[in-house]
Image (cartoon, rainbow, N blue to C red; front, top):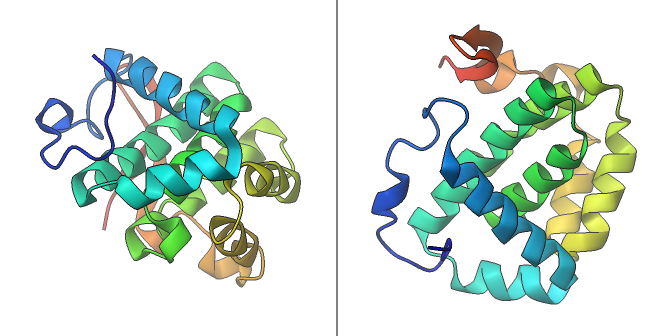
Length: 168
């Protein structure tokens, strides 16, 4: 079964954000985001236009999980996947829900030694306008407005290792 962002129910993804690691749904979404990435801005636009609110929610949860997995796996590629998913989850429309997950990606990039401006530039090339504008505008925010704490998150761990947790 493959992820359909337009599906209005998304029952298979109930409690996905809080699911333990590993979860087979992560791989399913990895494949979906990789396919969108290969399609570039036209694929991002088409996906965004047909995504349901529930589909956007799944993509937002995936973005947070991808940031966690990037740290766990020491895999910077996951950060690009997270940014693409975040744009598809609503960052292209400046969604507050999507915006609140940006510190996860920034923190994960810092932990992995990845330069956030370079990562955002790579993602902007994939997502095109208007997602690229909101990605770049993140860098203009005050540092205190880009922290995990400012958006209600903390870095911690669970029984399987490192994990970002929503605390607000």
